[in-house]
Amino acid sequence: METVVVSLGGSVLAPGEPDAAFVKRLAAELRTLSESHRLFVVTGGGRIARAYIEAGRALGAAESFLDRLGIKVTRLNARILLAALGASSADEMPHTVEEAVTAGKSSRLVVMGGTTPGHTTDAVAAELAEAVRAVRLVNATSVDGVYTADPAKDATATRLDRVTFEDLIRLSGEAHRKAGPSIVFDPKAARIVAKASIPVAVVNGRDLEALRNAVLGRPFRGTLVN
Ligand code: UTP
Image (cartoon, rainbow, N blue to C red; front, side, top):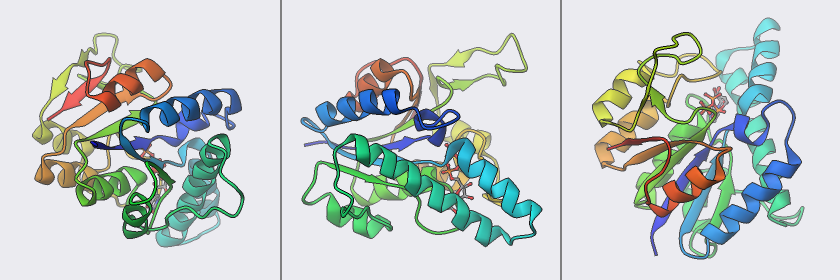
């Protein structure tokens, strides 16, 4: 059975507030996909994490403290998805990549949030993808792929069907320096997938058809990084 890791942006689960109706449909889709694939889903923190990080920064908290605030929110989002999957309140989610690898031995669908300060959940997903020898990593985010320029600012921006690992590294920038949002993909994550040659499918996580096709390795609306 093929293993796929999904890095699920927090903004997908909670564009503003948590979107229960969407999370229910997403959970049903993930359940169906886990019948044919072993799935690991790493949830991000989205706008809520950003709001807490900004508040903490305004209060003078150190970067690692802010990262911990972010991690809490990623785990909060993981819990919302777990609620939709019918998990019991006593169920614990993995807090490390190692725990997730172990959980994957007895479950076809493992959900977790962040791990330690200094990176984003994209990096957690990339570390996990390498550890479980995933055939691909699906980056389910708030945009439907990688563009030639920022589509919000440049009307001529077009979506790229395929980019190389080198392009991804260039687009993702230097390193995670500050708690808070990354641009396309965490630079640490980009380097891990490039080194391990794990293809990445960038899709809009709210487009469940694109998400399904990307997980299954079929043609999808989005950008393939390989
Ligand atoms: P996210 O993974 O949601 O980061 O974690 P992001 O960049 O906002 O979202 P995506 O990946 O582009 O969708 C939110 C914040 O929580 C901290 C970081 O500060 C991150 O920016 N965090 C998260 C950690 O320090 N470690 C983790 O393992 C995960």
